[in-house]
Amino acid sequence: MIEDKTTLSAVPGEPRTSLLKRLTSANTLWIGLVLLVLVATFGAIRPDAIFQVTTLQFLLAETAVLLVLSVGMTFVIITSGIDLSVGSVLVFASVASAMAMNSVSGGDATNAGWGVIAFGLLVAVVSGAAWGLLNGLLISRAKIPALIVTLGSFGAAQGAALLLNNGSNVSGIPDRLNRTFGSGTYLGIPNIVIVAAVVTALGALLLSTTRFGRYTYAVGSNEEAARRVGISVRGHLTKVYLLAGTLAGLAGFMGNAFFRVAVVTGHETDNLNAIAAVVLGGTSIFGGMGSVLGTVFGVFIPAVLEKGLVIIGVKEFWQPIAVAIVLVAAVWLDQTRRRARNQR
Image (cartoon, rainbow, N blue to C red; front, top):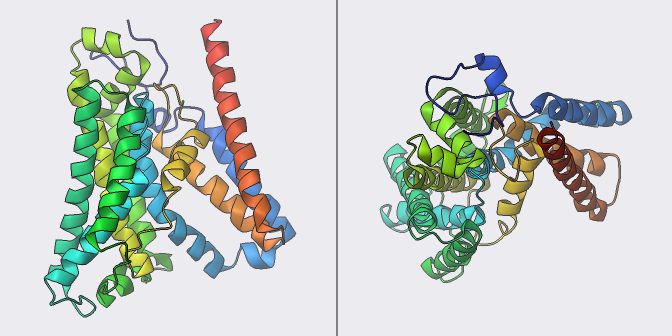
């Protein structure tokens, strides 16, 4: 029997809870409260800076790429897995996409149209999906631990990105891409944030309302029990890592739109930031429990914390320390919940 760690039914035929409850599983309400308290605290100290439209727009825009990356990581960690490669896969997809757009534009895609941009998006997504598929097959078929596989692909993808353009950044990103998705807005909301919001909403629905989501929870709760009730664990794990890689590729393309250049450095800690966001959002590092909504809160807690500390004048060296304290506290709370549940 599968241990009931979630608000979802993992086995067909079991009663299901309401959509709202499924979307807010893993105790996300208290995590949202933490985020609200942070915003209120910094807002009370510096309301003139925190609540400026430009401040909020930039905060949302600069977290959009990490949010897309973290949605994929949520699925991985719920299955009791880990993916250390997503940051490097993002870089590889970003570089491959930029080079592809330049290649079909005579060496410079600055003035390219939507056809070239669509081709660049395809290259980015396929590149990310290929790395994700490789990870999934090695983990599910070859039975190599996820930590080892993704640590290897972390280095391999980073090295491959450097080889593609001899270790140099790739310029020539289409101006139209940057104007529309990188810096453009709709009703005051950055378009890149709208894209991230759509991806997040689709991820939440996939996890909370579909068989794919139920299987994800089931595999993370008890892999052997999931296998006994007829779930193809190997196939499902492959799909989960494929999804994470695909979203990493999309995040790489979004980064091109936002920064107007494909950079080969600067994303070294994106994998750790995504893992931290997922764990901060209440997803258990041991698998079987979590939600995309919680991950959204987990992405914004360190972002608001760092931005708020800058605004109130705290030295930047204290920012990672503050984020680390919050992360350790989140893991401690997760372990406390697990012990309490096991003692019942």
